[in-house]
Length: 373
Image (cartoon, rainbow, N blue to C red):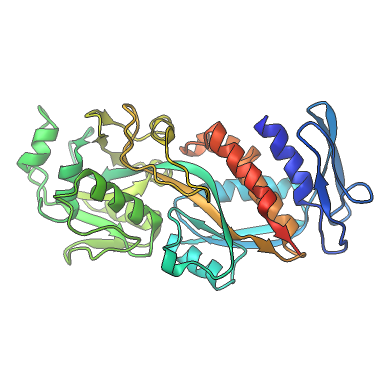
């Protein structure tokens, strides 16, 4: 059902273009989606697919889009852009990283068409014009490390909080040993690596510590925090991964996709049910079940109560303005529709968890709230 609805909405998404002022109307699922006056056209190309017992008219879109922000979702953006533009040869979509904070700032300043972000705007920072959040994936945030002789590691929330606040400074500390009975831990000094940029990964990681270790974690939560002076900062998830790779004894927080790409080791983390859970797409999916989704499709997935859920699981959104101009609007709608629709098939190979069926349906339905013109 979600697939049929998504396909129908693509037809609606592409009803306006650079050369036509026709408005698109979408029939009920299983019916036809056309523009007023006949088949929808954008850039002169039209394709038709059957679905749900009725004809659905879709179109190839053209134009240029720019996005920036979350480095956590960048591997997905790169794959999605390649696939989407292959099917729409007249479309150019670019996505620069820079961190979630940069994406939100760029969107507010209207220098990009969409922002990638792993956390919503703070109320005080929201753009004046209405915006829409589209969740596109879930990702485990790993506690990655480089420690000679240690292939497997388990960490509880209190221990993680003490490591990253620099209360614990060596790997053979009794608190780490208590989490890892029988493991021979070296006396290597711990080097803490963190993000230098405004980051949704930082926000979700520190949000988890506030929830799971409230008396131990004292650095609060945010896209940036006041890290101790003897820590090291890297730009983006890849920058943190590089510090870990090059430093024996280093530890940092990195999304799973980047951690796998960098061939990092990462810890299993004790969840609220008392189970040590390895970060994976499956454990992120478990953590995403039963989340409290707000009407604007924002939510938190950290410190999940699911017995098999990985506790440091982050969502990631694409954020756009609700009102789009007639030139870019059809392409924005079509690309967002791809990210929450067919693009979801790309996520498993990138070590992300896709949206649940319910959340995907909500995201697809919200595309109808985008106003063009």
